Length: 261
Ligand SMILES: O=C(O)CCC(=O)C(=O)O
Ligand SMILES: [Fe+2]
Image (tube, rainbow, N blue to C red):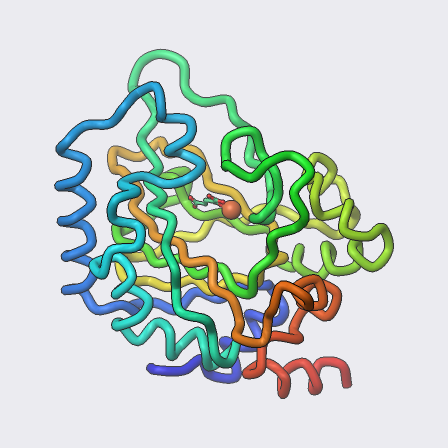
């Protein structure tokens, strides 16, 4: 299944994301997990935990071949490019681990709250006042099985990409830089926690509101994110990919035309 079929592209257009089961071969998943778990064996700096949660763990691996191969040498790039058209080489990845909550004692009260990437938060390393650092497609590769919800799942607000595109036209880029009102925007909808198995690929539009769920499971959730950029995007034209949200998705043009009637 090297390419997205019509039905999958329709899902991506409507919901803002699509899950492609079993896209990445098990041997690549196992190599990446081994490297990550070995890295973890060296210990974590507890003073850095908040930052690591936001900016990724095992930073010495995030542009190593064992991680980049998950996108570049797995078939994932070809699947994604069937929707986006040519993408720039992946520069690095976010190694996103979501840890189980304590068995006894207080668990996280952090609410599920949608955001888009490339906008300021106190912990993600993007400075306040930064312009929108938009990209084309958010690509998630799951390295561990995730049969249940509330297990650190990637969580999306289906259809919110269209709501945020409208907000951009009505209120400008400011509406995207501040996520505090996202859930109260009419039509934003309800969150959906994505379950799946190791090797699954999730392709999400940049404008799709997302978060991660609490982890009440016994397992660490292992997921790798690639923030991919179309070769059509330049520093000078990047906001055009938000205004015309499928501009940089060459493989979606047929779907866009048929949906616009
Ligand atoms: O870990 C996840 O599932 C989502 C992480 C995320 O959205 C982010 O780091 O920006
Ligand atoms: Fe994010």
